[in-house]
Amino acid sequence: MSLNLYNTLTREVSPFTSITPGKVGIYLCGATVQAPPHIGHIRSGINFDILRRWLLSSGYEVTFIRNVTDIDDKILHNAIHEEMPWWALAQKYERVFSAAYAQLNVMPPTYEPRATGHITQMVQLISHLIDRGKAYAVSNGDVYLDVRSLDSYLALSGQKLDDLQSAADGEASVKKNPQDFALWKSAKPGEPSWPTPWGDGRPGWHIECSAMAQAYLGEEFDIHAGGLDLIFPHHENEIAQSNGAGYPFAQRWLHNAWVTTAGEKMSKSLGNTLRIHELLKRVRGIELRWYLGSAHYRSMLEYSPDALDESAVNFRRVESFLKRAASSLGKLPELAIADEFAAAMNDDLAVPAALAVISELVRDGNNASTAKDSATLAIKAAQVRGALSVLGCDPWDSTWINSDAGLDEVISGLVTTLLAEREEARARKAFASADRIRDRITELGLTLEDTPDGPRWSR
RNA sequence: GGUGGGAUGGCCGAGAGGCGAGGCUCAGGACUGCAAAUCCUGCUACACGGGUUCAAAUCCCGUUCCCACCUCCA
Image (cartoon, rainbow, N blue to C red; front, side, top):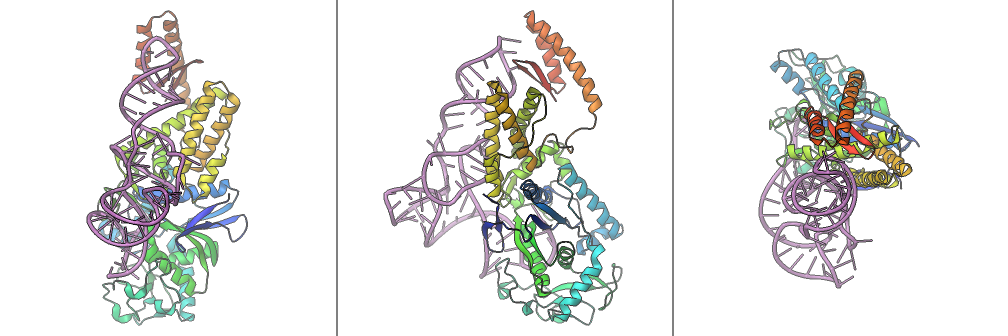
């Protein structure tokens, strides 16, 4: 079975075929760097990172674009509030986003273009739209897209132009239609601006994605992704701009659902933001990633501390199986893809079904281990590790490995010495002494297991 | 008003006409000096009311409640 994916445009799951065989171009709407990310932003990154890893694992060459929108109304607003230049604020939060992605093992995009670096492309695109009669400049220097000049505006969100609640729009008088949106905003005192044929100004919110997608992926590309709340207006307007310019644009649209708290969407305005660095005090990065990736990307993920903890316990079971398998096999497991895992992933990235497959593989592997069947153990461990790798949760991925390996060696030596003493005590049936050693090791945060092959410890 | 999504066991979370997803928790058992880890067994749920069907969590009709988008949004 090959990959089937949902498409917001058709509202159904259909076989995925790339425009160029063997190659996939993906554009993901990244951050507007106006504030630190919450786990909802990062969930989006993780969901589509899993898509990317699965395509890579399936043999595709993937060009993955995730933009940074570093100029918009909110950035200018927040810069005033935080008393720093707008570009300093954008840079500050871009770094926070990058760090959060890195901490959760989200692969860096192939290219990560910034809006402010593509003003030339935007101006070209806007000129082209004006030439084609799809956009118009007004006397104050604003440029608007004429939505009624398009054939199929609002096809993605399935709305009708006349049913939209009319926007509270003070500038309505300068626009042909109230629904027309700004491609270019004329300069206001104190705001950054760039020179254009229509006067100095700055980009509207949507134009950067149309311009950058075209610059890096061409006039037509495979997949455009983003959060559910971008369908309207952002993605609808990207389509309007690109189709208006005569470009086919994205073949397929994928949208991830939100992380919710108490049934409600996480948002800055509600003030219920959950920050990555706070959650990393509770669980490890690999566990947070496992949790955020565990629900289907099109389902809401209802956050609670208990749900996070429980998910972390589930992950540790899988992880400890792999670590045990590695020490039993005397080497790291290979990476393999089980057929059932592939079937789940090919079914519109059915991660929950894939997790069920992993659970079965772990059970089979544990049974093989008990039966001393190392050939089967090696296969199951490889399939588990391969699956975790696709999910971005391979315990041996360099992201998760501590750099203090030298210290680990010292600890290992000390623990081994203590364990030898405990074994000696146990041999004498001096269980009180043996348990005292075990308790002390456990108190220090290490896990001890007695196996038929002798005691095992792990951090 | 328009457009979508949703309600599943103690908890998380899939499924979308028929063979109990999976995990977590809990209880019992095997193993163990005792643990831990592991394995086995158990806990038979789909908002409500009708209907269709041999068969409904799933389809149809109606109802209740929740959430989101309608030009700031992942």
